[in-house]
Length: 339
Image 1 (cartoon, helix red, strand yellow):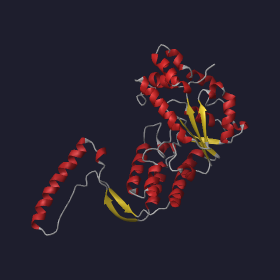
Image 2: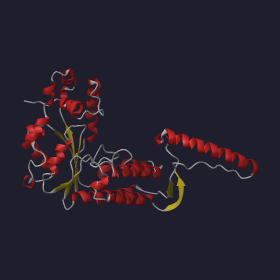
Image 3: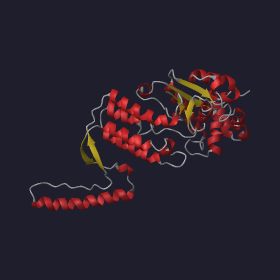
Image 4: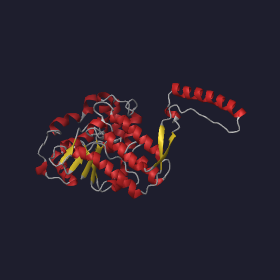
């Protein structure tokens, strides 16, 4: 099965790629606005790989972190609900996956809490309970030869202790089985599947080890429209649109960061080319993905350049914003050459 994915940065047009690919009869997938970042994001599979294979240290903590973040996203809002997205099998397969990674259970223990995750009330309760227990320990130890050091287990759930002896081959095998079982619910009987933001920057060549057949798109968009979209339409605070110098630094940094994606199975696409050079760009995408134009049976159903053109040149409406002139000077190499 060929895995197709696209990624961008806050309104750079990645959903356009997903919508376009969804118009092909041979490509399966769901909801272009659903981002599958949990697998290779923070506390994701790269973290498991690092602790199991690279460092071979603290795999129990990596398992706990992955389980917690999966449990969070399993029921995260209506549009980002992983349990619903994977037809009610997300946590079932995830728990099975982590159990297979854990190996043979040899006992139980209590994980010490990550104190930086505790709120002030929880932290206060732990401190008070341990203080009380320390007084009891002191009294007991004065009259007994054995030493007692009882501490509080509050906010420390009981966890199994397992034997973690994994080589890379076994880790990759178990992880591949887990991912492909989930992906099957997205792909159905299709020979290709598109999943938004599934691939991110590669770690230790992990993608090549997990996926035999993949294609990854990176989208870019004129920085003036990215700025206007985030400041006036999305009104997000995730990127620094309140300070134009910081915005330019951020835009330049993220595009420089993209150089880490230079692999044979990566294609860069400008959002504007999908509109102003539609036929040419679609042909290039078809060749890269390996689909035929005859399979483009839902043309313009999900991505219509005649509609999406309204999402270009937004900065013209805000020309009085001095920030536009600043962007044009500072980020000139990324400006789209509108005719």
